[in-house]
Image (cartoon, rainbow, N blue to C red):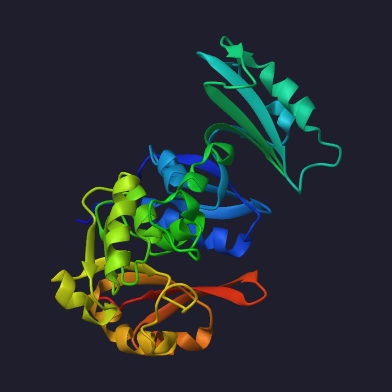
Length: 343
């Protein structure tokens, strides 16, 4: 007899994205939901999503995200804000009630009035609008959701890891929040090995280490390899492995496969292209990158020109392509590839 697996307890969660690059932010959130095995993710208003996360994993969404604005575990929901919460909520410690009025909220909805109405149903505790121990955020759209906030972007630390704050840096490098996006697009899990075959200053590897992956880097330049080690140690990423060599030799250098690859290959602006150009580097490295990936593993990378992806298109299945205009002379194309499962 086949027994049905018991349903896992889940928590509803509201996630709001920053507006800087909505398409990329949504792709990242979908990747995070895949990792935590969430379900039912749907957009309830522009930049705002509702989904179900396995019990205890709401904080994991917040911990991993690069382009999130705020994350809240749903306490209650209703057709209108005035009905929230259904009964008084007892609070221990200090708290604040915040309201976010979404683009599809009823006309005339006032954030301040929602905050007063919901705040009046809190029992115990003490209001602290400066540094509360608990923040209750109400999202008001076509429906209203009262959430216990677990992440607020105002408290993020991405800027602390920007290029200028690294002991070793090159002037052109992905901002940490976009490096984090690349990591999340690979769907890498805690404890899995992630390789950056053109690791440079280790910006991507730092973000991989912070989400719990095991970072591995390769760089052809001795100075970059040493600088990558220095940066990883500076940000507390211990146990990372950095190899000096060429990406085309990845499998030999590592002695085994990895679960994921995330990289921003050299374009010749400040990182070396070995005087052969980005196209030639990708031509000589594509097979090695595909080979070093475990079956079912993913590669996420940025390229300035989609034509450069042709060697990878011959070897892996492209799942995603999103263009991000950085400035007049640079567009970053975020690409995700998947290696076929083993036969």
